[in-house]
Image (cartoon, rainbow, N blue to C red):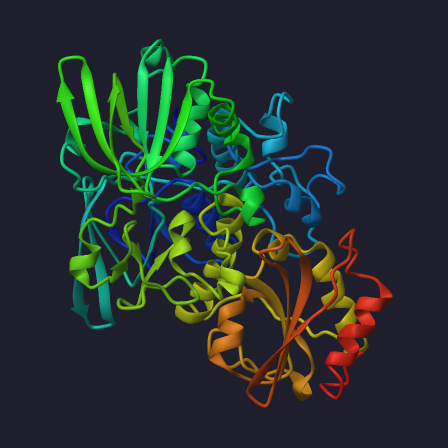
Length: 525
């Protein structure tokens, strides 16, 4: 595929730039679009030959887990439509801008046989968004290492690439979380990882053992049901489905056919067992397991073994530079605005943003590990970078006191940011002149003003002037409701509003509840 949106000459030659973005998946393309919209000059580099990131390869069995509903209860291209289109990148500023052909791009590219796009459709959607919006990337430029240097204008980062050296005060890494990870279990080096899965026909008539019971393992099992003679999935803990957790945590409903086959004893076995070692034998493999419940050993013969054991973020030498990471996936420790907690000036975009956990209320994580969550984070990140490093950022319009309650209620009803990032992002209205990132912006008379969509954890933990924030939250029982957070004289209180069977949160009853909670604050009504 030719370069998307770029001139004949390769863009962004080695040199000095205010900011450099690394990557060309949905996270990089989205943050580059948002930075350009805010007037932040930057370069974008990618080792790939074209846009798409992980969607150039995965998922193996084609259909994504995220939907795009062409006939949603909102007009295509409207802001509210984003709630039902989890796959298109965002070509708007989050307001009611006019509808253009670079919004809801995925609808044009799906063949109509499923609301879940295929992998090629998703890859094409990212490329088409870049083409329509003019996002330019220097493809075939591999990031190899990173250093820091002191200069007359302070610290700059140096990116050493296959094309030469780049220097910038600010870096954004959108490199995904798709690097294979396997435990050091004896014999694990003998088996293929998920990323090395062969064509389905290669497993026809084979006894397949899949190590791991997360979505990647069940994706393979589901896709190979009509090929493999027998499928065994094993890991120490029981698998839980998203239907059981009332969230996107757990095995997604699209992959539960192997569970039913296991229950019906039709050639699929799901074991709660530890993998002690993998042994190569003349006929293939023996996987030595030990039951989680009773500790009994169970050797399982297999013709093929696949380790669906997870992924890491490919951070190269960033940890040696001072970027702290955590967990099996080596996610960077981040601030609420996705900046390295230990190396200021280095930010992260895309699925790697899941490292900023947020409130984790009810134990339910954000959707930052998926496009429909990370795309909103990218827009907030671009605004934060513009404000903190380039004296830019969008205006924060005033909100009349008699419109505060209606505005917050309407956001709870239809804001896609709040619905796609439940309990993680919030609409924030502030009564003071402090901008969210810490700089001061003066507003007349302390009137209410719209600070936009911000991380809820930042609002709750950092402090600041009197303010109100509305979020949409779902609990373990699957109850969805608006949550109003009010900060008065530095103290944040939570006000959970009643749920509604049709989620009609913009009604008079909800406006009245918000007015009551805000009583005495800025004349809100």
